Length: 285
Image (cartoon, rainbow, N blue to C red):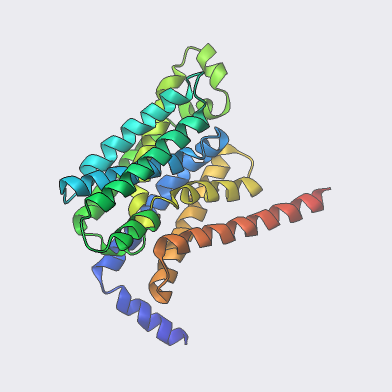
């Protein structure tokens, strides 16, 4: 049994698309985990879901105009929407959660309508399923897609490391750093833009409906055990990369949907960490 499994893995890894999927999947998981902790602590968890719906609508527009690389439309629209969400959420007349719901539902509805009115293929249901749930899109990546993903991942990771202390401050005490003369709005904007980059990257991995899980679950799992900001981020990154790798391997071997399998792995790890936290808490009482 073990020998058959090893032979099957060796066969699959002789194909470049498997390596592409693994590289992109691990990079996206790492990037998602970095901002996930900040988004959860700032109660911005739902912004990932909102922006993913915007990206879905942008992909429909890219298909409508016939672009072979939809990144030229999806990325700018998602970034602009992230900025609008941030600005609108600070408006006293429209709460942040209401703004996210308004933009996300509108973009999802418009995207689905455009895909039905101007179908790019005869299989509209398959196209929608692939976009929403990731499906097999991660296994059809080209070398150029991998290069773009690596460049965007480097930008995200470098931005997070460069502004780590400012992101930390904005996350925990925004009023204090405003009083200290630091422009908190600039770093909130940076967080929103980086989140938009992550959303666009993750579209091919888990689809637009499951992106929030990729961002939130590793952070919540790490928070069950670790208390320091740095400890939670490191643990979240390890969990996210582990679950992404496990999900991709399981998907290849068992034929399950990639995105759903990764999210299922994240859920299992969350419950394991939750159980560990309960045991530790009982022993300390």
